[in-house]
Length: 344
Image (tube, rainbow, N blue to C red; front, side, top):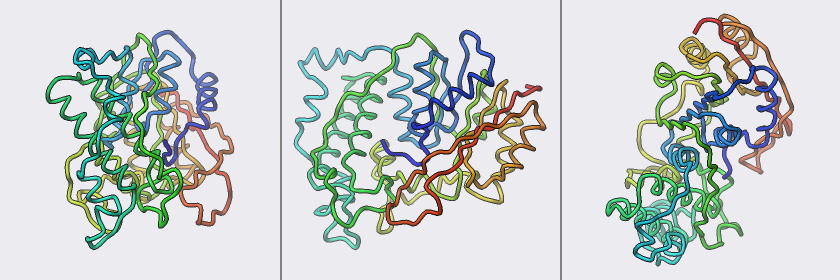
């Protein structure tokens, strides 16, 4: 799925940096503490690392539980005993007028103050029906926890593919785009089968860093002032399905903002140093581009306090969530700041 700041296109670059900077040994633990959709965690899972992965957004946690923690074939034995194939059954459901339909589709909102068209009416009803059924199967113990998070991951991915947005959910498009007209279809997502340890968290990095340890800590924090909870609020609601209070034209969740201190110019630098200071990892890698809030020299000076520092850099194609916006340049410089920590 599309995700702000996704490192999908530079996975091989990250891997090359690790190969150059980190002496490799067997059974290493890789921690991705700002994991987002889990593309970095998934890549290093496939490479054979033990994985610790975390994100404060619940929909990200669902994806991590479904695609990283699961490492055995999911058989859906209780459903198949009832002659139910989960994907055929869920794709064949009739739609329901649930929370997504009532708040994020044209007909569901046409009498309200704000008319929203994040999904077509049919797709919104189908999302509701599938989400309700997955929850019902869980309550009836027809699926186990691994199967539950896997199916939710499939639903989040499928919903994102038919969303009428320009990649993020801070706003919907005025006209419904071609891909949003396609009927939503749940498809199995690929799992990586490895016999390693996978631990998934849904916590703030500041508190989590004090409880975990390993070999490699990979950091990909927010670079600027954008708010991830606003940009992905509908996926968060599909994951939680908690009928939240919503507000404004975008229908964002009316709750305390999960805006990170990394998004605040007066707090980002101190937040970063606190994380480095408390990290119980020998090798720390920070992905951070040339337009980030924290100055490159400040990053270097902070990391040098705690051990041996080295920096790598590479031009990276800019992520554009808004095609109508004018950007100063079509690329950013993606730095990977590396620290070999001396006192752990």
